Length: 442
Image (tube, rainbow, N blue to C red):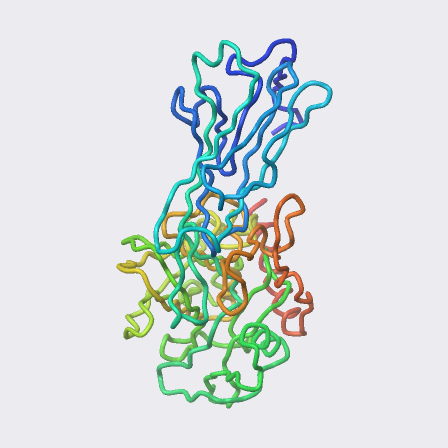
C-alpha cells in the first residue's frame, strides 16, 4: 500500500550461531541443519532434496554456508559411489571462505538395476564444532533415487517425473478428427504446424493433419502460436471466425503420457489464455478433456466452462487473477479436472477446444508432486526428443543452468518466429486482456 521497505533484520557477526559455524540447506526447502526451525523436526539432522530419476532434472543441489565467525573446512561424502557431487569439500567463513552450492548427479549406468526407490545419504562434516555437538548431530542430506524406465513399446510421449507431467500446449502428438463423421484430410500443414511436426516426428512428409469441414468447405483444425503466452507458445482452433463447436464436431489435441504413479486424484490443469464469454454468457467458453489408458475406449469427455457470468459491471469470478497472471489456471480451480489413474502405464490425454478463444498454453498433470510456482513445472521429458539422464528441465526454454545444469538446449534452439495467424490471435487476446485489466482496475 505504501512505498516503504519491510522491517529489516541483520545477521550478527560477533558471535557464532548456537547451532554451530556451518549450516546446510537443500533445494526445495526453507529448512537448515544443524539447528531447529519451523520447517523441520526439532533436533533433526537430515534434510531431503526432491527425488531424482532418469527422466527428471539432471541435478539437485544443497548449500553449505557460514553462520559463524571462524574459517571452517567442510567435507561431503555420499554413501554410494554412483551418487556424484560437483564439490566434495571446501571452506566457509573467515577471510578466505566462500559459501558453496553443491550439485548432486547420478551415474545411471552404474546405479542398481531394476524398478525401485532407494534413499542415499550424504554426510556433511566439519571440525568446527563446540558445544553444538551436544545438541545436534552432524547434517545428513537424503537423496531419493527412483530407478525406473519406460517399456520398449512406449516410443513417443511425455514421461512422468517427480509426481507430475508438464506439457507445452503446442507439443501435441496428434490431432484427432471429430467423431461426428468428418473425414481426415492428408493436406499439408501451414508453415508453423509443419515446423512443429518436423521437430517432434522427424518426418514432415509422413505427417498427416486431420481436419473437419464447415459448410463453406473451410477446414477446421488447430493453429500453433509460436512465442505466444507465458512460456513457449499456444495452440487454438482455426479459423478464428468459428461458431461454437459441439464435441462431435471438434477435432482434439492428443498428448501421449507414461505414468508411473497410480492415484484416484490426478488433477489436470490447463493454462489457457485469459478471455471472456465473448459470444455472451448464453454461449460460454468451453472445452472437453479426457485422460484414459492408451488403447482403452475413450470415455465421455469432461466438459469445462472456465469463465463465469458477467453480472452487471462485475467481471467473472477470478477474472482479475487471470488477467494479472496472463492465464486461467494459475489461481483457483477454474481449469482443473480430476481423473483416476488406477495403474502404471501409457495414457492418452485429449483436449477439445470448442471455441477459438480457448488458447492452450500449458498442461500440468499433478499426480501429487507439483510444488507452488508461477509458471508451473518446466516441460517434462519427451521420449523421441530427449535423452534419459541428460535432459535439463530447469526452465521452460531449456537454457543451460550456468551453475550446474547440462541441458541439451533442444527447445532453446527453436527459432522464435510467428506467422500472421499468430500475430492476429495474439493481438486479439491481448486486446481482451487489456480491456479486462482496465475494468478490473476500475
